[in-house]
Amino acid sequence: MLRGDDMAFALKFRDNYDPDRLWASFDSLVRQNPALQVVLKPCGRSFSWVPIDSAELNAALDCQRQRFPQFFSLEELLSPAHALTPSLPVRISQMGGREVCFQISHSLSNGRGAVQWIEYWLATDNGESVPVSQIAGRFDSTAPKTGLALLPFYLLGYSARAGLNQARETVDLTHGKTPIPHDNGYATRTYSFSEPETDRILAKAHALDLSVHQYMCLAVAEAMLSAQPEKSRVCISVPTDLARYSSSLSRTAPGNYTSSLVVQLRRGAPLQSQIGRQFRWFRFGLDYWLSRLLGTFSPNEQTFSNMVARSASVPVHRRGVFQNVSCAVTNVGAVKSPAICARVEWGCGTTKTQTILFTLGRLNGRLSANVTFPRDLFDPEEVFRVADAAIAGL
Image (cartoon, rainbow, N blue to C red; front, side):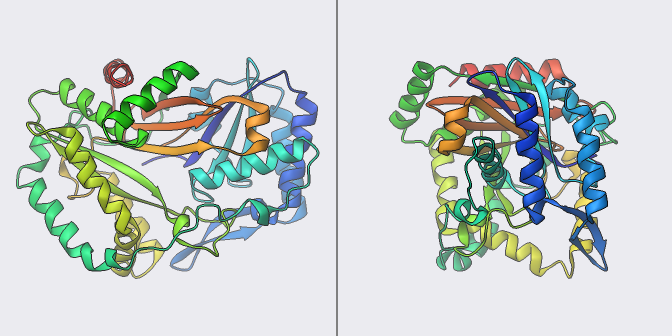
């Protein structure tokens, strides 16, 4: 099973920063926001974020303050030894070279919610007073009602396309390994693009009538299928932001408002058109309705958590229809926050998963990408070779 679920955002500042001032702004961020002064605990058959008292808060911040002068690499921060402690769901760490890492529990927030907290932190560091309510709800929408009617067609179509031999036909870079506790931590690599390179990538995606997220999926799929030519199917999990479906939900409200759809692609047919067709399901809110369906069949959160734990304990090829994925590709999108753009030159984010996770984001006109995966399940040399090929294909 995974140990820790924190997300990590590496940020490279434009100029040298004052460590004492940066820490003071983080300390202020936590002390001024009760939403960050919580710990996740079992509550009956569910889970709940429980407030900690002032003594626990002071102790947790003092502990973090003592380690803040140290420098760590991103891989070190993703290791079990540096997992977020239960007493506080956020942390900042110095990485050297004007780089700082902001970590936040994925149970507390999803990726775009984490960006909101980073915005609030850096605005505070600039001496600005930005109420949390001002940075919430920027991606509001309404789940299309037609998605509920289309859900049965999506499920039947997906199962039909998967076929009876889905496990044997699907790219699996674990090579059938059984998951074990991730004591060996995670391997990670970051790719940074210049503005001209970013413009070229965006132009190529546009020429193919694909979004940059879809274009990344195309490059990853081609690299995956090339890595295992005997396989005919690659499955890419695409995480989505459920908070965009609520006009009243604050992005700083505790909760991992994330769902996903699996994009399955077959060798022998144009991948570009396959991706375009399958991404259309997002327009109808299928990610929203699929998560609602899963919730309907789970009487409580504890039961759902146990179900996920059981599926995560078996090899990928023995998992269910929507769980035997080859990798995941997520896109934070273009970060336009003035507080972040003014202070940060570039950044990238990642989180711990049981698969190969590709992340993508854009800041100040520059794309950045990252690949992260558990060392106990994957061979770093093989995965980095595939990741390098995917990036080279952009």
